[in-house]
Length: 319
Ligand code: HEC
Ligand code: HEC
Image 1 (tube, rainbow, N blue to C red):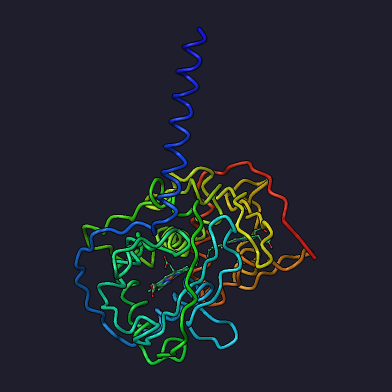
Image 2: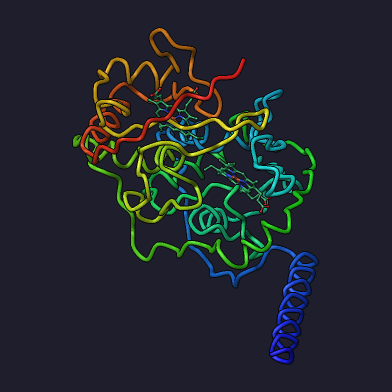
């Protein structure tokens, strides 16, 4: 018996030592890199594409990449990134050749947005957004805007502050987070005359589902309706003070979701953050003023068709 315990104890000691050594090695290394596949992409630069790209960039990229003091995409510290991921800075993505993305090809930007693999092959962890389901035409719109002469994106030589990913981010980037595959066929735009199709597209691609489902960690980014607690809220993004801000249940459940909301109430909440008799919605729920009433209506129509889930979420209100 005693010998058996000794062997067991020794085995455990060996395992723990191996574990500690593995962590020390991972910590000394960087986030993993992947082989880079060439992506061919020719942006259109059409004026309609640039205008749509501006809307999409404001809704999907500015929150992280825009310096609020100057209104330019020169990057900033992400105050709402959970501290356990490290100290995260969204970099300069203006056209500056040294500090921005002036030297990146369009194909390199597409690869990053689709898969999460950067120009040099390194993986960008989940604190950088990915767009695996977005229509090619909308990807073109974003890139055409990033290359336009709009003041948000013209070259601005502001140096980046390097991100310091934590050991946890490094471990997860080896074990759990993986790049998405490059889509193997064209992704068409939804039929915009069909509000359910358009609403589903927007609810997924504007990341509504990502914040409003149970947990970022369990979301299915390639097939959003398979995410646990799809649109039932309770996810825990942080505000700019680092406090948890629970997300609301947007399923059509009448008691705990938005099943009894009118389109007008929904539109006011989404576009302006306004709720009757309650404080204004606040960060990270930003007003989607760029959306047309038709687009918000399409999201509403779609949400009314998804399975209702009873999940009561109390608003996190701080003052
Ligand atoms: C939630 C915050 C967040 C959002 C939203 C976001 N990004 Fe990022 N982005 C980051 C962070 C953080 C990095 C740095 C990642 C790294 O180095 O691993 C990054 C990196 C990048 C890079 C690489 C730049 C470089 O010099 O390495 C590009 C290009 C980029 N983002 C473009 C975009 C575009 C376009 C959008 C909108 C479609 C977007 N990002 C949305 C946070 C974000
Ligand atoms: C970055 C995370 C995030 C994203 C992305 C996001 N939301 Fe929210 N949303 C929240 C949070 C957090 C709240 C609660 C805000 C509060 O209590 O002040 C909220 C509240 C709401 C509410 C109010 C519901 C209620 O019961 O009070 C609606 C409606 C809503 N969001 C719709 C949307 C739609 C539509 C989209 C996509 C276009 C979206 N949200 C994208 C985080 C997000």
